[in-house]
Length: 165
Image 1 (cartoon, helix red, strand yellow):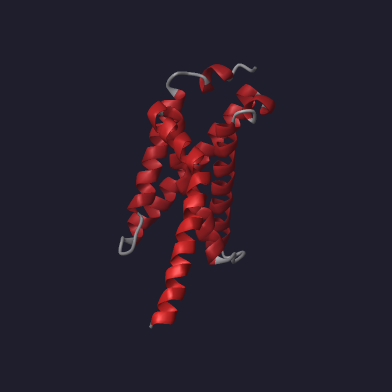
Image 2 (tube, rainbow, N blue to C red):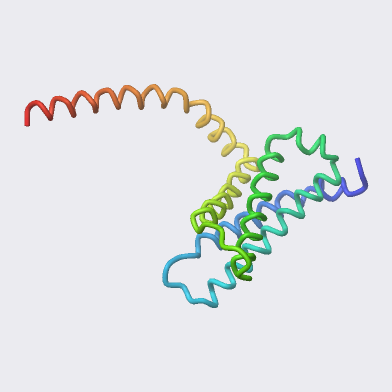
């Protein structure tokens, strides 16, 4: 472990990052149709700055904890993925702004939606929310069975409706 480990393991580090995640989520929610160009530019700047902070956070954790220890935790892998994809989206948007390349608009929208996954990091910080999230993940296979029964019943009613009407 390096000397930077005391900073990333400090008691205020994770709450500060969590507050930044909530602020960034509020900025993403404020974006919409009919907002002024000035406000949109401020939101883009805020999103870019928060993406840089999240990438710096991942880099600091990798440096402080070592890559092997960092990637042992599933939440860190998730954080690294979201930070990397967010940085890729920011870089692609910068190239589009400069006019050097024109990636697909649907690709940019898809990469932007990955930023919304940052709010899932709040699950890590709150025990009750983590239990609910774990319960939801464990119930997904059972929901597949219920969905298949629902589709069978829906198909039967569709066939019945075709024959009657």
